[in-house]
Image (cartoon, rainbow over all chains, first blue to last red):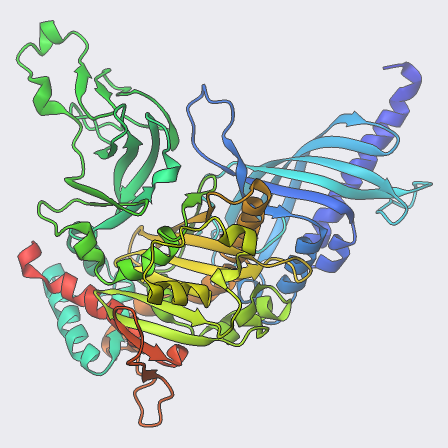
Amino acid sequence: MQEDQIPNRVTLQHECEQFLYHAAALLDDRRLNEWHELVTDDISYRVPIRTTRERASDTEFSDTSYHMKEDWDTLKVRTERMASDFAWSEDPPSRTRRQVSNVRITDSSDDEIELTNNLVIVQSRKSETEPDLLSMKRHETLRRDEDGYAPEWINGPGLKLAEREVLLDHTVIPTSSLSIIL
Amino acid sequence: MSHDSERSISSDESDPQQIRRLLDHMAEALEQNEVPLEILNNEAIYQRELSQIFGQTWTYIGHVSEIPEPGDYRQRTIGEDPFIFTRDENGEIRVLFNSCRHRGANVCRAEKGNTTHFRCPYHGWTYQNTGDLVGVPQKGDGFDHLDADDHSLHEAPHVDEYNGLVFACIAPDAQPLEEYLGGATWYLDMYFDLIDMEVIGDPHRWVVDADWKTPTENFYGDNYHVPMGHKSAIDVGIGSETATGEQESELYGIADCDGHAFSVYQIESEEPMFWGHPEEVVETFNHDVLSPEQYEVARKSGVTLGSIFPNLSFIFLGGRDDPNKDPVGTFCLRQWQPRGPGEMEVWNWILAPADASTEYKERVYEVGMSTFSVSGNFEADDIGIWDGIDEAAGSVFAERVEATTQFTMGTGEEAAATVDDDWAGPGTAYANGGLTDENQLDFYRTWHETMVNEGAE
């Protein structure tokens, strides 16, 4: 990397983190429609099923079976349903707190940024004192978009989510349903 | 998930006394079409279920398409007991106990894979995937007296397959599988003989604070809950066309079917329905294997669901995951695994017609996943509702007032559900089947019979 690119790299890292924090906060605050406005029309959102495998196996993740495999329309269906007064899995709603960390940009162009990050979701329900924990790594692609999210100090287009692959640490999901966006 | 359901009620009774009291209460309650609430969270009852039900009846292990090649294996459980579901080198399907004959360690530690041998990581005893013991380190020096033939991995004494569905029974004596399934075979043939089905990928697995009997009861035929329980999904226009009201259908509840039960939604139409499968997929079916009566039921089917005692359920649904996409026929097979009183682990497999196109199978998967799975738009709300039954069932108060659950729907004089004597299949068919509890009563009657069966101990 050339020395004069370093400020750009730092700025980009900060901008991506701000996007991820903002998107996580929208979900924690149950502003599902606003979150959905931050995904691109061609979004690919996948949560492949993980199995316990021997170390020598190529992958622990299925390439045919998923906990979620979504496009723009099915995410719309989910976010609309979750906001319904009759979605018993989320009414009364669970309380979630998303911790995003280890954000690392793996590739970037003028239009798109590929990155990975870790996410821990602490989910509490009812009067339970021990929350459920969901732990995962995410591979994502963010794309420049005029309607995307931009912090105030950014001039020009903000960012939208174009691709997300969620690699769970769980083979057996520890929550009674996945009625939240990961 | 916090396991606040594990508390057993405060009682001076011994376990046998408690079991006897509850099963006696159940016998009386069933006469009134009621079921004691306590059986949904009681440690003594749970332990007896493990031995009397899961230790005595045939239970589902897996589908042949999950282990297509010699050496393929997957870990499975019977009740809570660990087994390896494998296809040995000779192509024979085996259900081996996952415990080394030497010191009991698991010889298979991955959920799935392919291997000719299972080697115990403790001392290295090695078994062929037939179960035969073929390697004992330093055998000549330490185990020269050991007859390897007597130390194969234990295996389920009864393993059999019906149209690709593999079941096992760990009781010493078992009736033949086909006899156990009884009248259910007539219905299973419509899904697994008419259609060559295959499992797609790996099952969804998740834990739920509810007793295994709660969803089993539901899938025996609780069609009364659909408009309320699934309103959020129906309102956004997904699921089956019968649920959204786009298709008029007649629901038949099939009870009295050798302990198993089905719900069959029939759409009166000249058009072939076949659970929403399009013409090019229907063309791949085995059209000559069914009787004309079975074939006609299959042709008119919109949605079918049902359960095989004790804990295998399915739903075959013509539906969609998005109101703007074409419906497909999706098949979700599920097993409600006992994991403690008031606790279960759900296993959910999605199946598609094996001879359909890759693109179609993908759509079948997507629709299945988005309706019935841990993230299913329908399933999530069921589970959200069931959470809490375990707490009520395990309460002191439930014991004190002898609380019961009600299965009296359709027993009044003006009841809309009526027996249809013209039904061609086995069992008793109730028209307006959503307005009777006969199916669910069948589950609890079978459960009670199995629990009190002294001959099986």
